[in-house]
Image 1: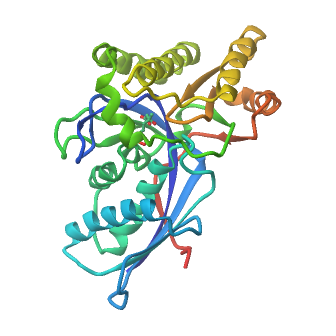
Image 2: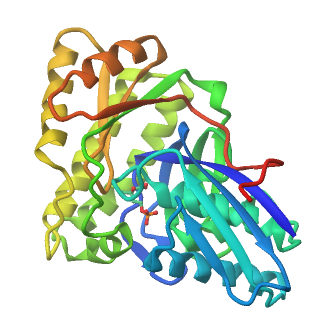
Length: 325
Ligand code: PMV
């Protein structure tokens, strides 16, 4: 009745933004991502008849808002397993949470896999992905290995993620540049519901299918330049939706923008690197592995950058034997 899972966060190259169904978290469009080897959540779940309440500790804290989301997800797992037993959940991230590094993706993926196992469920990868999606949309992409597509289904059963290629398929790297550990003010869950208030949202949706095809082709053929140009354009397009929403969302800080300017400069100087940014201030610098050290080194010298974290493509969520309690 006790299980532990380790889950990677993931970075989307074609992003999920906007929901068809808020409760089920069915996205308005398909997305493509890569799992990240060094942004990890470890979670232990124990169901025990002696527990009087569900008990949640994340990074040593018992923060109410986060605990409520976890308990809601535990209830989904309990419903599937047909149990009412209370659980203890202890979760640890090896990186700052709620700054745009997708801790909800790794968090809900780890909780899903550890929780399902501890509840005695024997779920397939597809079923785990469907369940994780209901906790946090992007979490469904942290379940399968490597390079991942979240299929654009219209129902609970058809909206899940699949692995396109294993992690070793392509030697690209995501150097994350942390510019601040302040938490973002508007969560992505709230942001998704604002997406349709942007006058440009329908245009973004119209372009999605073509972009999905293109990015898959570039990954398949390992065409780094075309891939990088497309993922960067996609990130900027997403920010155009943020800033034209009502109320507007401005996630980037001056330090984030400084990095975006620097990336252009580095490319002119011959370092091939592209950026993408999510709902937060931290910037993901995407390059080939041969340039990873150089990119981390130049990025760490930019004013305002507190830390860099180098991520290789990674396997998805897995069970481990070492428990946190
Ligand atoms: O899964 P959520 O609700 O945290 O949304 C993720 C949204 C983006 O990170 C901006 C895009 C994505 O596809 O990961």
